[in-house]
Image (cartoon, rainbow, N blue to C red; front, side, top):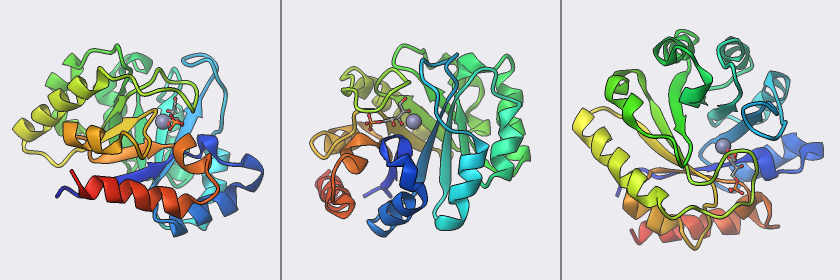
Length: 221
Ligand code: DX5
Ligand code: ZN
């Protein structure tokens, strides 16, 4: 069985109690904290920045996985690295020089990821596999929590799993959007190993029961 990772998205957490929320979700079994950054420009929503990342950093030991939905992206990369991010992902549409932005992330000591919207083609990957630690496939259009999983993402997940296998490199395959207890096994079977879930976890009163149920589903794959 692959090593599966569950990455709760704090987009659906209670922002008035964020320190407590991240501590609770890690105690409930989260492997990392998914941190969604939206700019009201690349995506039609506005969320949180490096100050909030810095504020939650002392509350958890697990990696903070920053998903940048901002354009342009380069100026924020050093800020998030200094704020304690461990993984930083961005969308190829948000950088004029994708290779340079990925290198900037690594130069600041973080793992580098590239995020693909449901309609974004994968061809940039042909030239970048050696610069990547994570590939994030969006299974909803970015901007909001609580949307439904777009089924054609499954084929894309399988295609990226094949590319990762052929590369021989250790690259996480993360899927983000509409992941729930009911569909996590299907997403894993398609080839994903890292699962972002916002509303499915933070929308329920008992985070541990959701995460345990997700792991139970993953064990059946
Ligand atoms: C959407 C974000 C997601 C979001 C997922 O743009 O990137 O990380 O929080 O939320 P759910 O799991 O509710 O679809
Ligand atoms: Zn996200």
